Image (cartoon, rainbow, N blue to C red; front, top):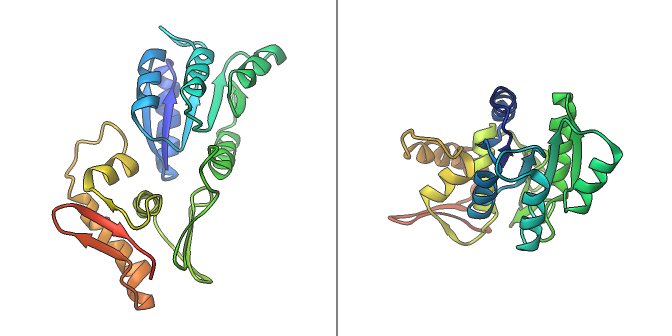
Length: 223
């Protein structure tokens, strides 16, 4: 799952990013409001964590502009302002949840998973391709009634494919979905995870649902 964190306190941003990355999220960070708004508009995120007090453009304005543009990605406001009127203003501007600093990381993680589970207006709670079911919030996958254990990164790659069943998804698109914005490693790492996924979701079940389309990318299709 991919997260945009818009937070001008670099130390806090780095701590939150490190924790979420360890949980399997791909996290992009913006340190001011205008960069955050641009990234939110240009990329597809599962959830946005948004501070209120930001340089150049505040969080309320970002949230309002995204909603006006028809962007319904779930948004959590994360801020030092904890008055009831501040919370009401955040929700009135289109935020889905609100968490005041200082906060418990355990609570932040639980609320983010709840937001992903709830999804945007047009995003389903779980994704189904044939008898393969992917639960983005719970990081769970099963084939029929059989649970399949995946690493966070394997799940992120599979999630990127399952969101577009039957379509060819390029290697660069999977990199954008499963790795953060600053990733500069070998793009062929995607092939490693595709191979690992085949060994888990296809081979044990005698299926060939994860297909390589030479020169184009990969396609996840119903059995």
